[in-house]
Length: 304
Image (cartoon, rainbow, N blue to C red):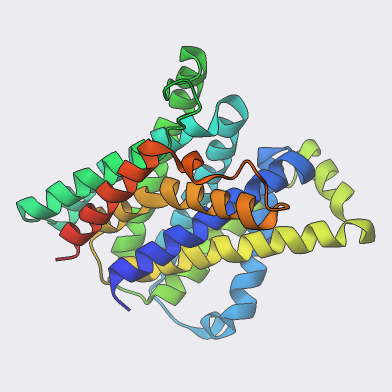
């Protein structure tokens, strides 16, 4: 499968997760650290159930360690992301996420000798602009940000978080030169398990998890596992894409996530939640219509 298709499918999967995560954070588990610890345990179980043959796969020990470190970085990013959502508006956090490709372009040039033609760079810029425009809500008083305080709080968390995520992508790309995507994916989940084991000793985390080890909450656990399956699907697809695609362009493609999130939210609101009368086409907004145009042109240019 072409790297572009894999990257788009991964982004689509994560967009669905973003919408479902709102339910988890608001109704089930309100502690960001507890959520990530649970993700670590679920992730390793899912990885070994789906890919048991990886247990007997031999890869260089240093590559296995690199993949594990990548996993730890990813779960650290997840924790910081949830913390940013606690302190700020999702719109602001989504805007700040658009800085990840800026980091990866630097890593691509410095460590992977990635260079592109002018149309590809133009396409990348259009995708980044489209991703930013997709986060603006027409109903939010002409798209103005909430407060400078919120922006600063999210900025202080997301900028280092995005740096960690970009490093995760870069070292995964390096590991994939010596191992297959399945192995890198599974050892990344080992990193997630180590993250979970380290923080399981937190009294707050242990108390929260004990509350959820109950037959009464079986549906919530199944729902959480379903979300994590979609999340892991996205992680695996993006890992597979990195095995034969450019780190710079693949990460740029993930910037289309805000428009996918908006479209999925629109569809859920219109067709699932009692066919809400508020889910009108104009809720997508002129900014998002423009973002779709930018993204479409950008994807076309970088795929040539």
